[in-house]
Length: 147
Image (cartoon, rainbow, N blue to C red; front, side, top):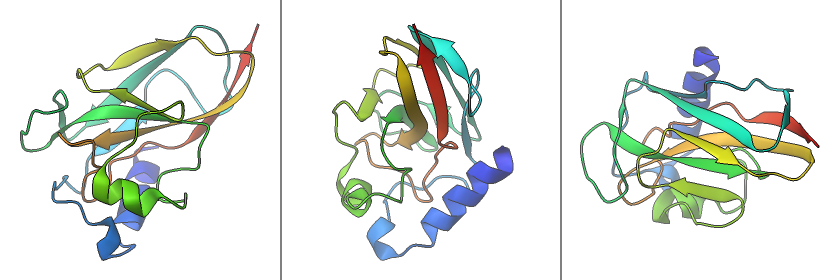
């Protein structure tokens, strides 16, 4: 999985100047979901634990080199594949039902989700919620929530 994360970050970093962030990330930084695998079937509330290698976690608003805070992309295309991702890369990750912020520096969450299929991806944001350069993202996984 680490190779996928690095490869995804590298691919996103080569898209072009529109993706450039002012906040650098180490090339070997890796973001991943610790406790869930692609295709998992789980019950609500869903525990999601965030893993990060090569960087540290700092709350939103705290500017410190090689740190960021977590965001969950829920039921949306993987970062770099949605129409508005260039805008997000330039201006920051929005806060809505598909973009869940953990600006306090949290490293896990318990989500109450209705039964159904969900996609989940982690995206690291800098002190302004802007993805790093290169972006530090996890693999996008699909989970099924049962009653």
